[in-house]
Length: 378
Image 1 (cartoon, rainbow, N blue to C red):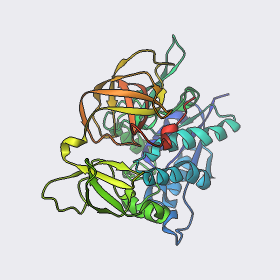
Image 2 (image 1 turned 120 degrees about the horizontal axis):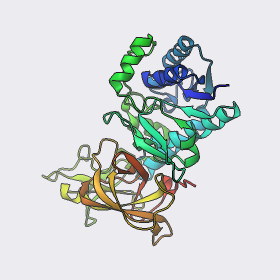
Image 3 (image 1 turned 180 degrees about the vertical axis):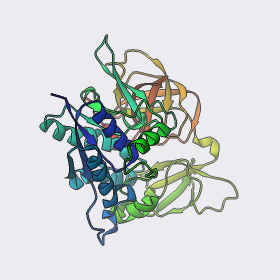
Image 4 (image 1 turned 90 degrees about the horizontal axis):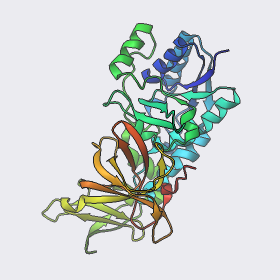
């Protein structure tokens, strides 16, 4: 009997081709869409979702499943998605950090609750349309995560928190293909999603208006406070920490005669700290919740390439073993070969050696609250 695989169908071309490839390979494929939005657009704006999570996307996913001749299920995951992804997203912004919701979704939903359901259905793995690759080291037995073959579409930086158990039960069928090849395969198969446009938005925020979403969802994150320079001098007022992120220049409302950027967000003082461009440069960062994938532990400093945001070109760096910080947290230091601009607490730092993902963590403040920093990969 063929192994059963559950495929997460989003209504996009990547997951559709992933399912098609697995059917071609002879697996017993089950298509699933997680319903993480309310069926009707509610009056409360904080409960509305973007186009990539629309009922139309469900119709497309169902049509693909019908074309492939596989069972299809729509699972109501609205509550768990809210608890695992949306609520932490709002809390992080309120705490002056800039989170990556896809990281939490992959860790806790797609390869968390969905994987648990898949196993209850006697499935051996969950497959998605991510552009990434997994192999197994024949010597150590560890599962290894690699960049997708298409450098432009690589999504390995959203998958760094996956545990060995999760990686062992993950399948990324399009990871060895380019986006053009995926489109071509979809057209050749006549899939309903062959021409579906790319979606770059956060799935639960329509029109990219995350500040409007946060104002409705977490109004307490918009308490007025001071805008200060690096010496603590007050230069103006702001309307809420969630309106800002490190590196931001526009929207400060300051008339100082020079360009100033957000260099830090200080939730203790409810202050936005600004300074000239050179104050955005940092030669190191500290990462919390370090998850090592390529090896079980780190005993000594390791040369890596560090990526501090999705569109950031990785830079040579040294990763140091995690150690206790003065406030009791366990942090791993990453020192760059050259200063990097706008190192942002709450974002991921993903560590590579070539195409191999060494691991990753959440960029932490040198001092302060942990928030999502506290991810425990064990």
